[in-house]
Length: 194
Image 1 (spheres, rainbow, N blue to C red):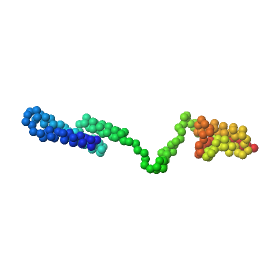
Image 2 (cartoon, rainbow, N blue to C red):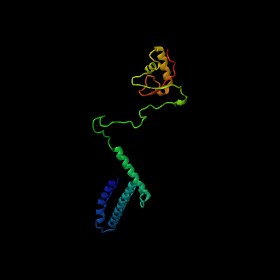
Image 3 (cartoon, one colour):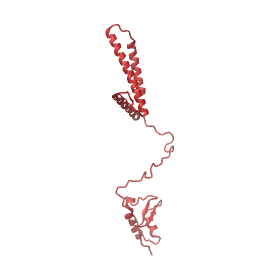
Image 4 (cartoon, helix red, strand yellow):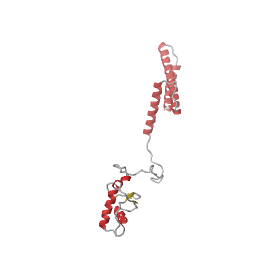
């Protein structure tokens, strides 16, 4: 912004100074010189107030002595120039080889977790039982088989995995096949097989 105002003031001064310095013999020439001198003074005043306003804004102060409409116009022009500069800047790819130049780390412990679609019941009111962590490669069937022990039949395992799913439906979601490693599942209390 300051560079643009300085360039505009320099162009105005280069245009007005020869007019002010030209000899004037008639009244209309004197009037033109006087108007050019006033325009040169107004340009210098605007250049100076712009500089004061920008310097004060950069330091976090209010530009005292600068009229409020001029101060507002300068600050608005600074905002427009800044926004236009950010929007007009081209987007560049990161240097280096793709996906090898930086490691992406999650910004939060919950990054990537699905959002709940309904309220989760209070754990104190849920069915008691112990908690089991899901291992990689586990399914509700294998967890039910491990929970029931080696003597369980296919029918008992089928019933048990459905009980586990019913107890953990809010954590697992609508598809019982999509359980995640390290997910913690509450296990139903079951009778010990003979």
